[in-house]
Length: 254
Image (cartoon, rainbow, N blue to C red; front, top):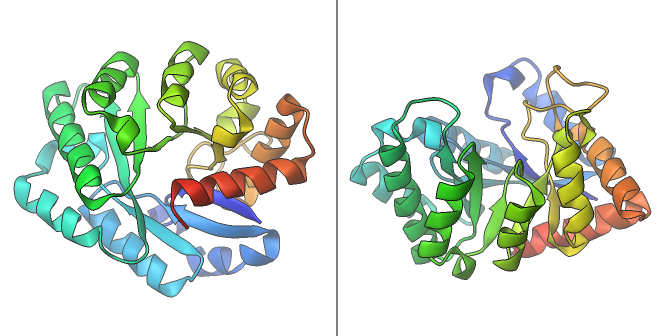
């Protein structure tokens, strides 16, 4: 069965058909879904989803773009939720320099705080890093993130950066971008990375693969990602699905 390592089914894009869509996953070969959180509100909604669907698990964390209103009280609240039996990671956390706000200093502060939290609660981290390659890597090295473990979601950097994370024992999250015409950089990373350190994701409702680019994404599109990885690696697609599922189970301790 395909293991979806990163989606956002709490998103309002799914309000019209969430139940029917999620109810169709198992029959379409999607065995497990990890719903990634980005804010206090999404944490609450994600936990609700895990209670309704046996195959859905959740992360606990605040996205860099949503950390401007974080405080110590919210951090303590997040930490208390990490003991929930279906909480499998701290995330998505990291740095996003694509926009000017929140400030870089604020993002760094709460990234470091949530890395500390992950170490304390003994959960892996799901890292979001956009236009912030050096600072993300510097913080993760200084915080000894290799002792925490996790994955770099929606990997977007060149092979040189991938080498650093792979050397730290991290998994590389691969989604729909691998099918894009301008996805050459990611295809090179997938060619280089050991299949044992690759996990697959959609980041639904975002980043739908070709031929659905620009439309709402869902985990039902994961076969397009698996097919492309199989093509690059010269492996049968069922082998890619089998290995990436095992990788995801190791990542999330399931």
